[in-house]
Image (tube, rainbow, N blue to C red; front, side, top):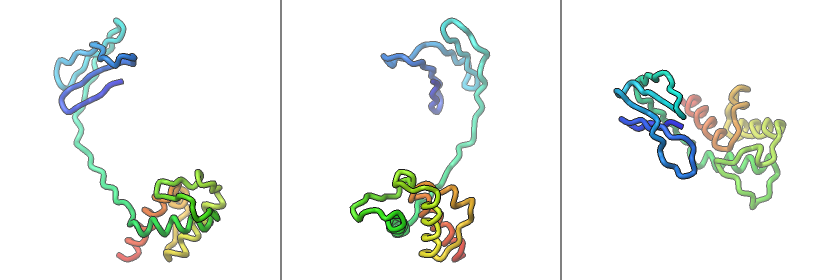
Length: 141
């Protein structure tokens, strides 16, 4: 397993003591020579990458709560059932037909239309809530 930090490279192999195995040599920050159990491999050239930023906006809490309520209703779950944003439809016992019914319930409740491709990508309550907020934003824009 190789791990990188901002300016260093360390190569470790699996061992129960978790001590680093001194089997790499860095001649410059862009070139790494690796040898493992006496076998030397061609040098690895490291390329610098531009840092990437990912912005993820979670759905509004009230949207997640409404989706939880709709899921409970569609799946006829008891009132005490714990349904959260992380809940997977499959873990709640939903089959493909149940998922279609959930999406139809969401469309009716929120006054939106969900494309088939988007509906197929929904696997959790949070996925559904994020998609709904995104559709509502584009609808109101």
